[in-house]
Image (tube, rainbow, N blue to C red):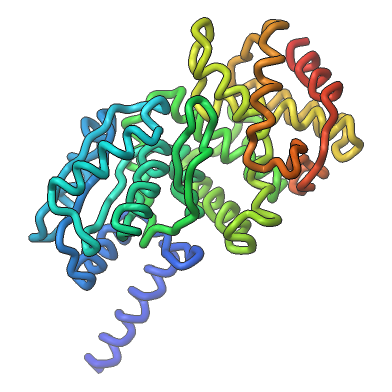
Length: 373
């Protein structure tokens, strides 16, 4: 009888573990305390020589104190801190981290745990993937944006000047650990920034999911963890079909062709306030929804719904006439471009997407005019 009870408990634990995880492309995405248990077992089984933890000034102050008590290991732990912000996501910061890893005796059996937002997971994954031709790394995202987007899918990299994510690799982590308690440390604008990617996931793949955000005053956020879980599922389902972005994974770039150009322009401008990633992508989604409508892929009613929903959440960004040409100039550097042609992922009704769409300059200009009107 005791043996049967023990077997039942083992099966129950296995079932609950499966319910609290998502199988990604060669690694698990784990949630909350179940994730910490898995992390400790994983570290113990792999017998790492040293554990390095990469943080920025924000995650060091607000998140590291929550994480360390969960880490049950006698291994040597070294903390590496960088300044916070997109401006730090460059090759010079990578050189600094590689140098620190070398000076602290990092070797092929070292583990790098990246604790922070999208900048930390992007740069940490890239540093680990290239240090001594690759060491293991784990992502523990602490912002909404990094939970639902940046930490999932294996993309790692840095900016080249003000050009987004021009240098990088696709290498998957050993695991991603989602703990939504970290979100309590975020200011409201950072939460909104992450919400943009959740809206995108609904628009490109799940109309019912999108519908939950149409009126936030009536939305039920009691199960916000469930909304995060579904957002991660949507991205993961797309990535699993196309890990190296030769086809359907390009769907995830909806709003990003113009959004990245806007983000880069505001980042380098001396007169513009730097935009958070999600703020720029929110504008990009409105612009590219307008283009989808004008190309006959989206109905006018759907476009108005998208524009009104996003505008109800995000502040309107002011564009002057002389802003457009620099933004256009940045479009040519978009990673999705092929043979010198700008490629868009456009909506083919809410919940569906068409990739590899070419758009002429006149229509792009009209999208900005409509946004400003």
